[in-house]
Image 1 (cartoon, rainbow, N blue to C red):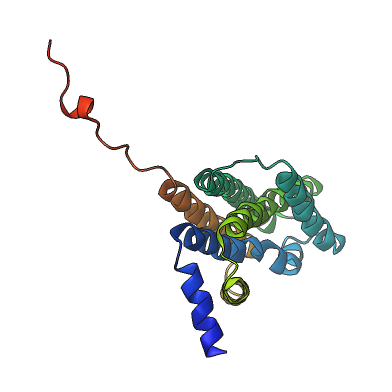
Image 2: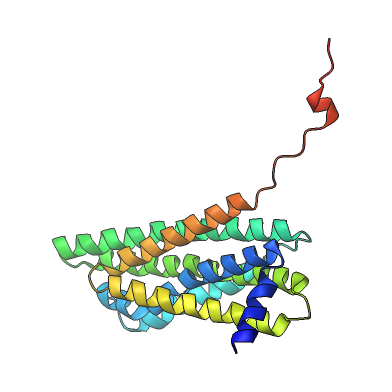
Length: 226
């Protein structure tokens, strides 16, 4: 088992693009599961009917499928990863804002009393927030495309075992941490903060994927004199 683990890690380390794909998938996917993991607590805290647990999760899954169906078909691995990280940055930021709105409205209802209008706003924004957050799941498609193109046949099984183990471990650790935080902080705030982290990571990955400055040519080094 130890030898297989070492072989799997060695395969991932042979190609920087493989490493980027793995890190992107592991980190972003870890936060993509947070809304679903906290759905029951979120609906209970927002004082919404229990049926909304299934509705918000379904909203996220539905939008995730739509996003995946509309992903651009890019030939360059660099473009694939850059496009993917820029896209998840937008979805993470959008979901963070929407969950923050839910937190504010829920807090206002607690202070000033329940109202049909306030509850309707919470329910509507919550559905949209979960749908937008579902866009984070799209990170799996482009990263898997890059891995499928670049992962060598020799050592592929060991490498995939390492990759999936890392992904599941990251998700488990993330859920334990956010679950513990959600016991002392409003769930909507925890969700908003998680989406901020996901957006920040995605933005950093997008910046890292930008091509390096082009080399200085002879004409640049020796400009023509007038």
